[in-house]
Image (tube, rainbow, N blue to C red; front, side, top):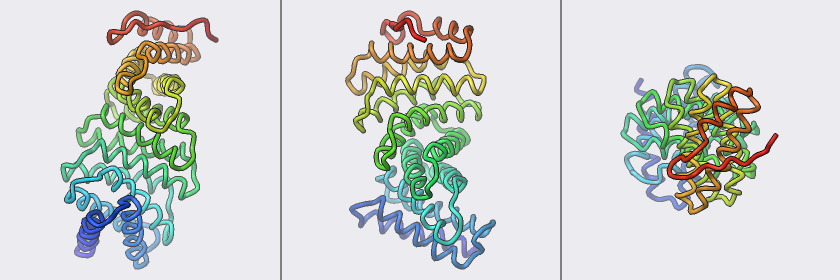
Length: 317
């Protein structure tokens, strides 16, 4: 137990010192966490509970250090995730499960220290995508793993899922651009993964859908992606994800339109066009599920939503 505590304390102190003196916080924490794990894991079995405990304690110490400094949460968390993957890769085995378990520990510890869960979620998603490239694994699989861990963790500690979803999507967009992935595809896939994860933990899917769409628009704008194409792909992905978990397609469609309107306002683009694109894409995706699903969605998105008259563009296949 004393050894575990020493790892936590050592990492916490190192993080505080590093953040206060670094110009590139992400890189500095990546190096610190990676180095700490390499040194600690060399004295353990490369797999098993002992190694897992070392990784967990390193993350706990990192989060406590980040909380003590009280700034640059997203960049710091991103560095921690990538540092864990880099450090374990050198002396043990880094897998998608490593990413998922690391994200879970980050969320739980952030809650314990009263930190910003949404900003932690954003940094965790960014780190997961960058780490996926480091591992040479699918970014799509990594975003699914991270989304599931984040949503589950935030739900367990009583955090707000809508704001968390928004930040996850923004983080996904930024990280996708950083590693050379197509941001639009990463955004839409992540939105679907967030919806599925929310349904699986019994969260409020409607609010998560809305938050995800707002984040999708803001993320697309920030990385120079085509906003309306992103709205279309995101709405479609969330409808498909809802259908896969047996959820309420009408609720998802309406909230996707509401999110598109809110997101469009936040970035200064045409709210009527955003609402139309979201509704049309949701209807198209629902129609692919079944005729009755399409009818439910049509009823949900017809009329005025959020003060905007929704125009469905037809005909379409």
